Amino acid sequence: MNSYIYPVESRELIRIAMQLHRELGCGFKEKVYQDAFEVLLKENNIPYEREKHLQIVFHGITLEHDYYYDFLCFGKIGVELKAMNEIVGEFESQIINYIHVGNHQLGILFNFGATSLEYKCFPNRKDYNSKIR
Image 1 (tube, one colour):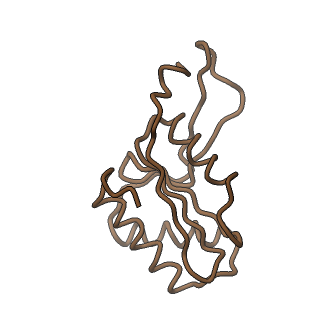
Image 2: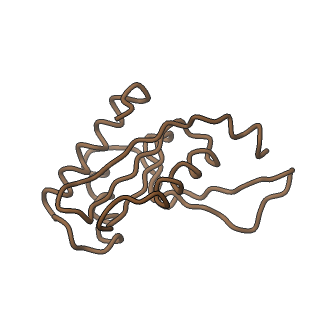
């Protein structure tokens, strides 16, 4: 885990994701985990926005297709939840693109589909705003 970026907040999100996986296990659809994750965010007084809208502005033009984080937590950490057999590169690319577009410093990808919770943290390694805006 890249704990040097928002270590307290990222550990808290990982803790509640572990609790969720421990209590529900694997096998549910992604939306079930999103709903349950939201319950735990509320119970733990973690500020969040669900389905946080992200727009891409390219050469001064807002592009037609939008992105949505599953959650933007603490106003600065993008969170994506999956319920797949394993984390694949497509999902990693998705969260990396989202944090670049949203200009956030950290993204966390959680996968609830395996028998043990899987997660990866992604720091924003690009100055993406200079390329998009």
